[in-house]
Each structure stands twice: as C-alpha cells, then as structure tokens.
Image 1 (cartoon, rainbow, N blue to C red):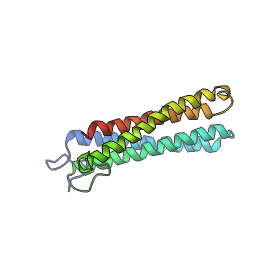
Image 2: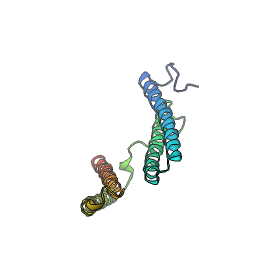
Image 3: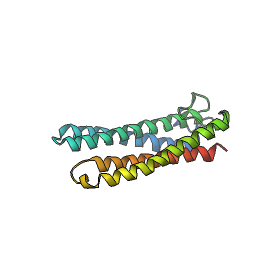
Image 4: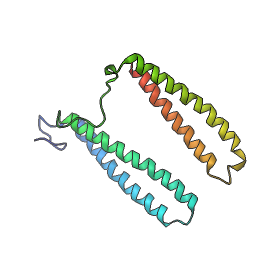
Length: 160
C-alpha cells in the first residue's frame, strides 16, 4: 500500500510528496517552538510576560493543529480514499445557499460593527497604553476581527 513517501505510479505525485514533507517538517518546528514558549513562560516571574507568552502558545497550538490537519488532508487526498480529509473540500453548494448567504451577511455586518466598536475602545484606552496590556489586547482583537472578515468574505466569494 503506498504512503506519502511512495514514488510509485499509484502513490502520491512529486508535488504531493514535497508539500507533505514541507508541512510535516513545519509541524516539527511548531512543536519545538511550543516547548520553548512553555519553558520561557514557566520560568518568568512576570505575570504580564507569562500572560502574553500564553497567548502566543494558544496561537501556536492552533497553528500546529492546522498544519497537522492540512498534512492529514493532503495525505487522504493524495492516497485517494484512504480516509476522509479532516479539512473538507469546498462544498458550499451542498448548503441552502440563500441561508448561507444571509447568515454570512449577518455575521459580516456584526464583525464590521465590531471594527467600529474596537476602534472606539482603543481610543478610550489611550491613557493606559503604557501601564496595562489592555491596548495591546484590543489591538489583537482588531486583528482577529480582520481575520473573521476575511473568512466571511471568502465564504461570500465562494458561495456563488
């Protein structure tokens, strides 16, 4: 039975093998980074530093999980039917498209309202920007909101 290193006719293509190798090597790097982050967070006496590093750990954990899901999905597709991919192919056509579009539009409107609210909040926090983490955290939420908007626009673009 072929695996992701098989160079046989019924195995994965050269592109599949190269991408899989890139993904799995990055997973290893992400794992090492997570260990370093955890070690650094555990050794500090600064609660602020530990708090921020733990936010990074959450992101790196999610990145690790996504890279592993992409690698697993690539493997499932390259080996044709060995397993269902963890990350599905685009199948918006299976949804009730009017409901999908209206739900996406509603969520996008809410995220765009959040953009305005977070900008307002960021201005309110100006006086404590050098004494608290609050301004940084609101900035990070603004970036998350931009990411949410990008996801929702992707859905809109691909649901047609």
